[in-house]
Image (cartoon, rainbow over all chains, first blue to last red; front, top):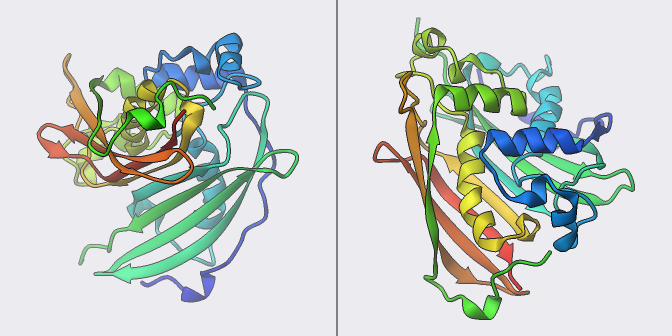
Length: 150
Length: 142
């Protein structure tokens, strides 16, 4: 069933702050095989002008995708999450995420399309720090595949 | 934000050093824990096959993270990444053996933009198939 177009433009309340920890960044960097010390050594990060270790570029997805759960699980929208695959992902950075950040995410439904029975949902997540400054915007395209004929 | 590559030293067509990233089931379990994405298609073969996949597949965001390394290793400072986007075109299938799968990533400068930025286009292949499409990063050079 096609999703309700009237949800386009809907913005959800900002999430509670996510506090970015050095050890969480280290865990993520190790999980993707990163050896760059800018992710684990504050001194190496300072040499590049960062006040603390920074996170790999895709780290923030864990935070924005959790925030997108507000949209995905909105019973009024009625998305069938069991059929959802990740279509596209994009980030635009004002600065890298770094240890000590307390980040909030505001999610907005940018577009809803129906294509060959698939529901396509574009969600924008604006990530801001404690001072309200923009850090990164994440665009996530989710595709709910058409239900198979019974 | 101090990339070790100078804007004036690159041209359209400049190639970034290519890299190959191995991915095994253990890699995926570790990534699931670090990222918080515990979707069973990334670790449970029975479940993956039940939903029509050939086998366990890698997290798309894992592949996106690996592809980024070709850019960030070239830059030195990952803080110089201004934009990064991909389309997930094919899954990276990860068999339950000692080998796992390989993700081969190459990149080249596709355009020189304003404000000392360039666009890098990436190609990511696994088992002879293109696993990412429209994989592009905009980065600020020194």
